[in-house]
Image 1 (cartoon, helix red, strand yellow):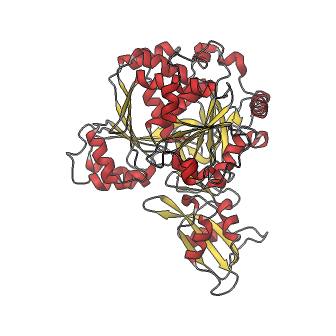
Image 2 (tube, one colour):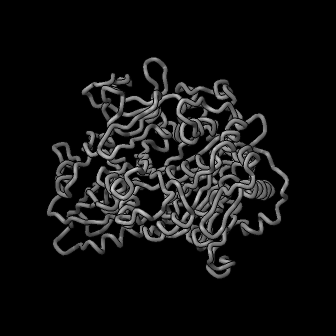
Image 3 (cartoon, one colour):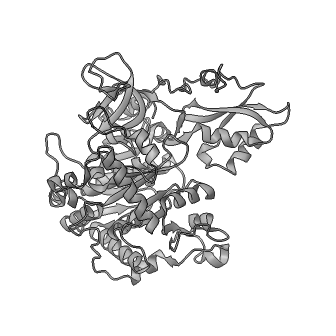
Length: 581
């Protein structure tokens, strides 16, 4: 607990030293009362009987969601979870995931998102880095993390969510779950009275933490103030409307809106799915969740139709393309569906055209942003077009000066104003990604390169580091390379992104074996699966006699890109001309 408090304090000091706004500015315009748990309470009071969440077979009204958040908060507090501590959440998209998220916040603690596709060592790395002292997890995922006993000395309490597996996995699966409690039992036993820890007046230090793969190969915790996150990524307001002055105005606007129904297909443990769900809830809408373990276009279409959804949220072509193919030729399906929104990775023009061919009037909202930047802009046209960005977004030159509209120069896309405090517990990475310009203005660098059109629109060119965006998951090439090179049959290797019709990009490995016949692709992938999450394992393996390197001994990424048929960035960060975040 003390170490967690020290790391939060260190992140605050780092942000302040680099030009962060500090507490005084956080209080302006009522922002200090814009906590996520407080916003839920205000909206629930305004529209208590509206359906907040449904998965097709179960549902929660706003009043019940708020009550369950209170009960879970009371349980966590009684179990030793103190305000400011970190609580990890592990599981697929479910009603319980969002209940747990708000319950942790209501207890004054900070939720930590865990990627359910990670293997045990990857999960342990995030748990250890965050200093999480409690875990809320579906039983099967908890078993995978804790099989044979916990290797996490900071973990003191575990809440287990029923997922249809064994009711008591401690005995049946040999799992040691510290201080284990059943989720449903915990809610039933907890008092219903409001905890109100996160809703008290002095909340200008309320924090939000989101772990992301980033561009260094290891997950980083992006630390936001909750008020800034709400302003940068979650607030919905009509064109020309001012920002809400506080929770009361957010709730009033939710009451005045007709409740829209949003089908969230992106994982709630990623920014795109989570932020879309939270934004819909704070607008008084209904969040529809698919509890399927995998993506099935036919089942998604049936769910969207049965739940009469108005908007479907996808993660790039990997979801949008199969859905468009399933709907093709059936314009009568999903009659209420009017909006397609994508985040995490851009839609290709071909997929946009497929959706417009199915329903010409459909609104396409292709969002641009990231865990470190919030929502920076959007593109809605069918063809390649610049993103329309806000006034806080710019393309910077090498001196951190914004490029003027119409410039023919390429720069780094960045945002200023309401941006994160930095990376949790990592001041060096914070200094690199959140620099201060000569005028003392603090920026966050998105990692992407772009140009500025004459009308101010930003054309996204590509990332400046060897990151592969595969179906919305970001894979750091060097991390995969290190695992590939650990195989005894590998002499040298390079990993790049190759074009893929479904995923946008797939992970491709170019490998030189130690000797002829010493390696086969199947064996290499089997080796990788023991050390990496499934989405990081190379989907294609190209065997070569020698991995080409530059004159200074670095991998020749341009040669590798040509071999797999794509223009990936060079090791020096030269921009890629294809877009793709």
